Image 1 (cartoon, rainbow, N blue to C red):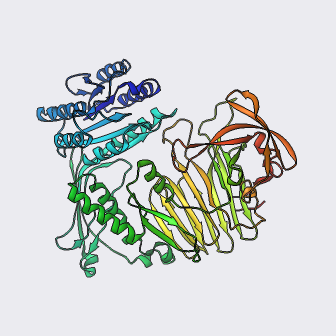
Image 2: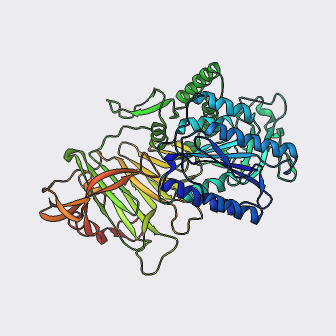
Image 3: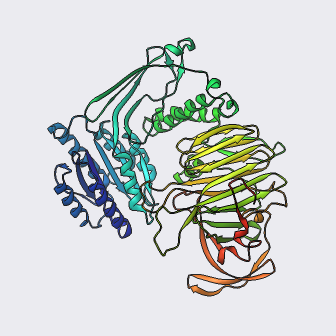
Length: 607
C-alpha cells in the first residue's frame, strides 16, 4: 500500500509540475492490480483525492490519472499535515483489514522546497512524523531540484527506514521519478533477520532489514568469538514474503582467503575487515540522524574514530593529498560538518587537491575541455565519428602510459538523424609497471604483472598496490593513481535501465599530469603542458547568446564560438557549466593533424 504525497506549492510551477504529472500518470499505470494507493497534494493546506485507499483496478487507476492531470500549483509548502494524514490513512486501512496482512506500507513524498517552519520547527516536524509512523511505515523522499531541503528530507527518511533521492531538473526528470519508484516499489521481502548462535559473534553490523528490494543486496559482517567453530557455524535467515513467510537455515563452509584468491593477496588483503569497518561507519552515520543529542555525539565520535583508523573518506573527514619532501605522504584531517554538495564532492573524488598544469576532460557526447589556468580560460571541441571507434587519448612513450577510449552509440537510431556517441570503454596501460586496466560501464578489470582482479560498479572498493591505487565509489566514479606518475578519474553516468534511447556511458578526467614527459601526445595528452593562443575581441555570431571570435593558434586563424561545456566531477547528473572557446569541425586547427589521425585498432593499441 502506497500513499503519494505531492507538493503543489507555487515553487512547483511550470516544468516541475508538468514533469511530476507525467511521471505520476506512468507510475499509476504500472501499479499491480492487487495493490492499494492514495494521492494527497499539499501546499498551504492539503487535498485528498479520495478519503480512503483505492485498489489499483483499471477503473481506479484511470480515474486517478485523470485527477493528476488537473493538479494546479498554489500556496506554500506545508508538508507536515499532509504526511500525517497519509500515515493515518494507511493505519486505518490496516485496522480495517482491507489489504493482506503482510503488505508493505509506504509513503512517497515529493517536494521541491523547504517546509514551513511555523508553527513547528524542522526537527519538530521530523519528530512528529516519526512518532506517528512509529516504525511501521517506510517513508521515501524525492527532493526535486536544487532548492529542495535535501538535509531535512534525508534525516526524515532515515528516521523512518527509507531513503532520499534528488531528482534533477532536466529533460529526463520523469524518467528519474519513474526509475526511483521502480526501485522501491518491489519489496521482495520485509522484516529480514539474520540469526546467529548465542555467544558466537561480536561487533556485528546491522542484521535486521526493513525491506529487501528487487535489485538490492544485503551484507552483514562481524567477528567470530572462536575461529575453531568457523566450519560449524549455523545461520538462520527469516523474513516475511507477500504471501508466505520465508525461512532459511544453513551451515558455513569457510575457506581461507588465500586459497580462493591465491594471487590477489596484495589487492584484497584485509578486505573483509575493511568491509566490516565501512558498513559500521555507514550505520553510525545513519544513527547520528536518529538518536538523542547524547547518542548523536557518541555515534559521531565512533564513526570518526573508525574513519581515521581505516582511512575512509566520510562526511566527517576529508583526504588532503600533500606534496612535501615525502611525495607519498597522505594526511587525513577532521573536517567541519559538510553540506550535501560538499559531501557529494567528497564521495565522488575524495576532495583531493591535485597538482597539474591543466585539467583535461572528455565527457558527454563526447566533448573535450582543456582548462588552461595560465590563460584563465578554457578551450573545447567535440569529436563525431561512428560508434565503436577507438581513439587514443593519452600516449607517453617515455613513461609507458597509454589511454584509449572506445565510443558507443544510443540504443535506438532514428533514420536520417545524427547518431549520438559517448565513451563506453577505456583501456589504460602502464608498460613499466606491467599494469593494464579495462574500464567499461559494467566492470573494472585489472591486470598487474599477470595477476587478475575484477570489480563491479555496484560495489564500493578501495585497493592499494605497490604501483597503483584504485578507489571505486559505487555507481559513481573510479580514481586511478599510478605511483609517482599520474592520476585519472573516470565517472560513470547511469541512465534509467529502460530508457528507450540512451545507455550508460563514461567520462574521463586527468587530475594530475605534471609528471608526464614532453613527448606526451593524444587527443588530450598534447595539451597537458599548456598551449599558446590569443583570442580577438568577440563579435556577433549565428547565436546572439554565443559570440564568435578569431583565435590565433599554431600559426592559424580559427573562428571560435563562446559557449559552455559540462564538468561532471561535482554533479554527476547535471554537471557544472564551464565557459570555453569552442573550436568547430572536430577540433580542426587546434589538434595536431585531424581527429581521424588518433583512431587506433584496439583498446591497448598505439596504431
